[in-house]
Length: 484
View 1 (cartoon, rainbow, N blue to C red):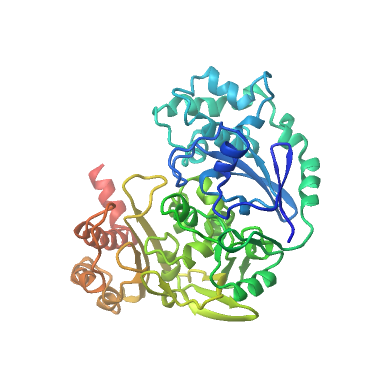
View 2: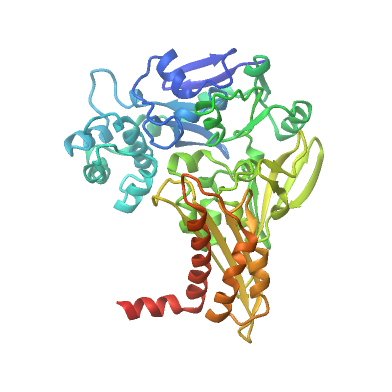
């Protein structure tokens, strides 16, 4: 029923039959012979395959960087895909971003360069005169194997001296492209292929609820930052694939009285503003969730729904007392996030039921919150462990309330209940903290894996509690001044 329809550079594409696991990168390189985008990691880590994807958001056309290696063709209905080949005409002048890279020696071996150019291009359209920190953030998801970041950053600073962003075709002809994309969308559900190659793009959330209730063995896909690796690394079939990342209702962000309400398909990038306004303590964590390409695609709901023990959002959301809304057909139920995770790979979610909303209470006045992510490298790395801490210290100096939650320490994201019990009602002092430290061994028996040993994880968790105590009492600042 229907067809997948999108625009590739300046060409209209209509597909009625394609594998559910066909990635955009394979389609570009093998079918369309557009080989500027490279496969480096096939897991959304290196950025060599970076392209821009333009989508309608609130009636406007927004372009974002995406990793083509883990983006499925079924996710592109009603979009505009822009590859490196579209930046300058054949035998014509280079694009300003490309020319800046050439003149400032930003390209060395050249393998990663197309993806780097596309990331800088996306930044240039949003911010023609970026600062060095803004350029570094834009390049978080691009690994330069030749370690040539200094000239790349210089090229980013010089981009606008080579041309006016207003003259760029994606900006100058934005209204025309907007009209073309609107013409692709007829408000009907797309349902093509059969069996493992079936791809479904529901027209509405109600249609999604009906289809998923009827097809509970289907795989829900929003950003594919995790599901993409099921395919590229584990060769799994995901069909029937049900794509949900285009549904406006699931992108709703409501800053309500008392809580922040996020639709399940809200991406990390979309949520950034609301998170910074209401939970500034999570700002550093938020900018360390993948690179820009991952934050543009990955969604809050999927980070919770897949139940990974090392997902970045569950620990702070559990500490904040978040709830989720689960939907099956027309029925909805509310579940505390801490209760959603049952065991490794098992969540409190029935067949045909999906996460529709995440509801996060604001931090009450007088309470303190922190979240710490421990990784082997600072940017774009999966957590060895992630700890969230929330405390209220009453006027007597005693702990009136405390919540501690960790990812990477157990088979699921989990509260440190024994540690909390050892702290509650006691003075918020170093003596109390040290007395509670042994309780970590009751709450957690972490595993040893490629990211960290069990002993390291347990010690790091204990030290993070010490750090949180020092920071909330001002001791960390005093110690820092004393050392200086």
